Length: 268
Image (cartoon, rainbow, N blue to C red; front, side, top):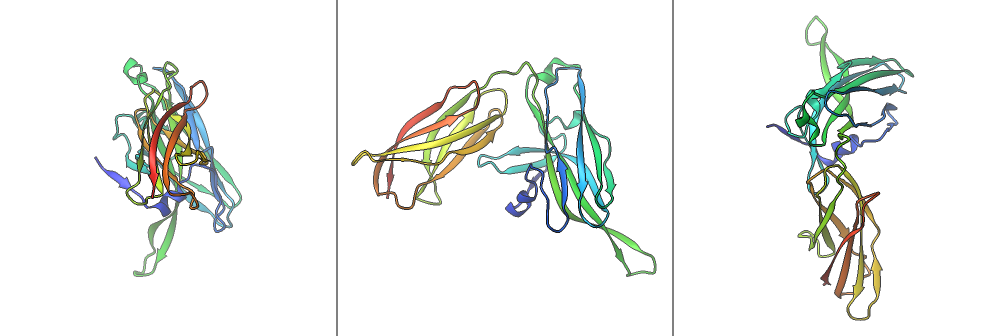
């Protein structure tokens, strides 16, 4: 099983939102494809690739598997490697396109579900990568030689959630001090349901000495089914030293009750 780890700089280039760069003004939208198919069904969605630059741009389109780690970072795998992958059910209309300056092109992503009840027992997902390439001329020999250089990459998330999956559940497990900093605490929680959750969490602190309360700003984060997540909260720099009770609250989204735990920490 091959895994691909990318540094933060690369991850910033794969933000799943339409974006432009001053240098190239390239974009792709939508950057998330949501399917809700049952067994045997198929559906196609279009991705628009735009070129606002002053020159023709070539794009390579391909699939990858991926997961989020416990801190929310993306880890990439070869397509159709993971058990929760839908890559084998996806078909791309093109693997390579050229877009003229100021123009746009569409590619089609088709998801065809197998006629198998096992296929709709779990949420599945994959990633469509749209990557720019450039042909460079080399004069080492009398003939022109083309080489390919990666320039920019956009990731389009693909999610397949069978309509029979309706269980939404999240569990707050613990609040742990970070090993890297004594002013950072990691809220540990887990998605115990069947579908991906868009969560929001916050901490409410009360000083044991005088009852003074401090509420930290909420942090939003997604979680795949069964995923364990560490959400780092940094305490205010001016917070007084001493012991605090902490109420850790997670909101898993619509139609879900808030989940919380109470614990005690010491600020040193």
